Structure formats: structure tokens, C-alpha cells
Image (cartoon, rainbow, N blue to C red; front, top):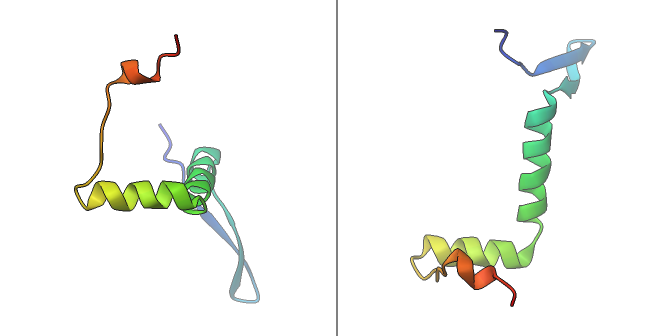
Length: 63
């Protein structure tokens, strides 16, 4: 099995681009979306501070 790697492209000894595996790029984009969402950042900070509130999955059921 071959390991998926990031490849850098250089021009005149300067890196000008990167080729990354699709899965890695999707993960990076998802992370960027979360970090751009103020509500998500507040929720992360709340959780890290120990003040997070957790509900059972059944709370998501719509009746």
C-alpha cells in the first residue's frame, strides 16, 4: 500500500504550490469552515472550559 503524500512544486528554488491528497484537502476545508463559524468557536471554547452541556441523541428526534 502506498502512503499518500503532500508534494511541493518549486520554481526557481521557491515553493509555489502544494499537491495534497483529496481526503486531506477535504479535512482542511472542513476545519476552515468550522473555524470561520463564530457559534462553533464559542461551542469549542465552552467545551474546553468544562462548561459544555451534552444531551442524548434522542433530543434531536423531531416528533
